Amino acid sequence: MRELKAKIVEFAKKDGIDLIGFADRSRFEGVAAKNNPFAIFPEAKTVILVGKRICRGSLRGIEEGTNFGDYQLFGKNWLEDEFLALSAYNLTNFIESNGWEATPVFPNPSDIEPSGVSVGDGKPAPNVYPDFDYAAVATGLCTISYNGIPFSKEFGSRQRFHMILTDAELESTPLLTENICNGCRSCADACPLGAISKEETEEIEICGMKFTVGKIDYSKCKLCENGAVVNRFSASSKPDRVAALCNRTCMCGLEERGALTNTFENKFRYRDAWSIGKDNTGMDRSDEQANVLGGSFSKSGKRGH
Image 1: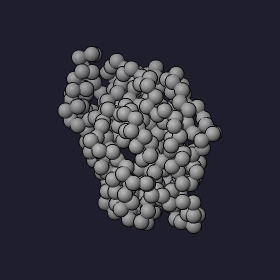
Image 2: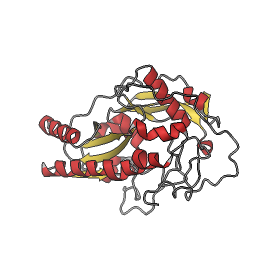
Image 3: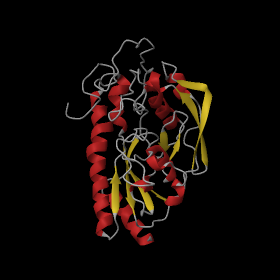
């Protein structure tokens, strides 16, 4: 199986995958069936997580406050729906061409409630949506930041993931034991809505590793006009905060202290960051309006609108 794993990694890298990690069943023990990938494919032996980077330049227009729509495409929608999906599909076909079943899984929000009824005793109701944040840690690719976002050693928060389940028994990637976030709380300082507490925290445990995360008021995040966007699959789910001021500030801090392997000749932030404050109470934040400065340029950022 080592030879097969090496072939998978080689194929993935040639196909433009930036990150790939492996986890066996034991790393998902105790995960509720409704979020457990092995509920989708009970005979599977391995979870494979594949990721592509969010190019730093896709955040430039948001950092300057002059262009928001292109991040929706190159940093989010097209990246998930087109670029990464094609690579995951190609890798799925490669694994199956080598005689092993491979099941691709899209990163739907894991907090969406089932939309059907169980088809048999002991089976969770459809649809099972795995927790990709959990999987990012379990496959050895990420740790969880104080801001509640998975950070990789390569890109910090700048990546998107798809999942592949396979009945090939492949060796797990060692867990990432270095916590990329140093708990500086600059994310909390940067948030103009005060959504991230500097004092109140919770502890998240994944595969025996514990991460301290600030208590986050996501109802405030959904009002944010500083780069956060409505979750395009479920307006009631957590908003996407990768481009938000809090996380862009984290990114600057990671780069300044040399915490990432993907480095640049020039720094990301040149000026004091712009921000819009607390007076957002009367604004429409339904799933029919993109949650960015400038209003509803699309319906929840869906591509093609």
